[in-house]
Amino acid sequence: MGYGDVQMIDEKGNRVDGRKAGDLRPIEIEMGVVPVADGSASVRWGTNYVIASIYGPMEAHPRKIQRQERAVLDVRYNMAPFSTTDRFRPGFNRRSREISKVTAEALESVVLLELYPRSKIRVEIEVICAEAGTRCVGLTAASLALADAGIPMTDLVVSVASGKINDVVVCDLNKEEDNYGEADLPMGILPNSGELVFLQMDGDLSPEQFQEAWDYNMNAAMEIHVMMKEAIANKYGGES
Amino acid sequence: MSSSGASDGRTSAASGSLVVPGDKICTETGGQLGHGVMKLDGSIIATKLGYVVEKGGEVSVTPLHTAYFPRPGDLVLGYIEGMRANIWFIDLGAPFNAILPMSLAPMKVEFGGTRDAMNVGTAILCRVQEIDESHSSVVTMKGMGLRKVNSGFVDTVPPHLVSLLSSGGDAILSQLKDASNCRIILCANGRIWVDGEPEGIRVVRDILAFIRNNADSDNLSSKVGNHLKQGNGE
Image (cartoon, rainbow over all chains, first blue to last red; front, side, top):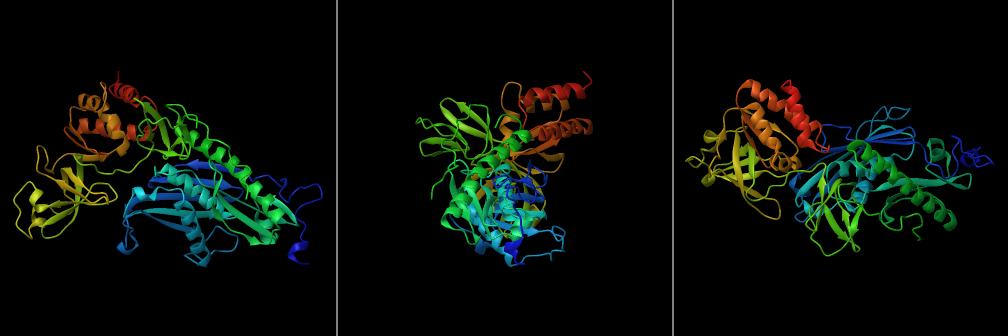
């Protein structure tokens, strides 16, 4: 039996966890969870639990990384050793370096780095519990933490992934769907303008399926953006 | 690629409302732009998380959190963090250390004698003299009241609350001075020097902790007044 033979969606369109194709997993957002950081946020997304914290702006060290005309974002994505069922070997690896890099590039699109020449803004993304889509959760949490730290930005970044299981396009893949699915399309979206700052694709999607996954991600991003604003309003009062 | 699902327009935010980065505050009218906002596609949008303020035609966002960035003329409390033969490096709580040249020290210092004059960890009251666009700043200790701090203690509040603490008829700073009978110097970088009797210092520390915990609430000034009255048993 191959991966494609695993039945993950029934004829009524119900997925293994009971969701419909366009449904998101439950999301809980909390702001200011790390008191010693300049800004922080935690996101529970299904079984994923990610904490992002921001330190800075500070003087960039070593000096060779300084940019005379702007700040640099020093993003560090890390999975805790206990975040997965098998112990995750601690420390940086190729995957965490890649996710740190793409997250930094996505955030550079919205952070007004030119206001802080020669500075560094440290973004720490710690995955406490991993299910599927941790890079999306990490990017979303990091953008909230940056806003919490008072770093000027043109927009928040919302990241969400859609994919294909049993030849059906679905939104927000869970662990089984991610492991045994046929494709995965994580995107980073600016909810106010609908612009894209991050896109990766794993697997094959036809142009129609790609459009369907795109639409799922765009709609989900708007939904998550509302949740993000509600979480901020819950923490700091006022009607956001 | 179509961008279906994206919001068609940003909704406007009223004065006093909480905005997040990217929220539209209003349509561009040609008025002045204050802190925490920028123009984008004919609209004024928030770039910081905070509350919208419209005053005299100027739109700005009062941020909930922000880092301190020195401005010329700021009275600041810094700590000596290092030195060379003729300059000190001062930690102002900003992203970059400032420098204090030997020529701007309050005492006569021989070349190479900087450590003897002010060692690492010494707290100083100084004023920002100049700053360039790459955030390099120079501070001076030549001026009235600028000196080494040898007594009292130093506490902190978020830098964006400094103007709130010191402005208005019922300024929190005045209330604190009256309630504690302490000498208090509030610096632009959010550091506060307090000197006086232990009981007065305890009152100030209690109020500053209250301010830090309630920094995001409305009517902070009256809340501090109520807290002071409760503390005095009234």
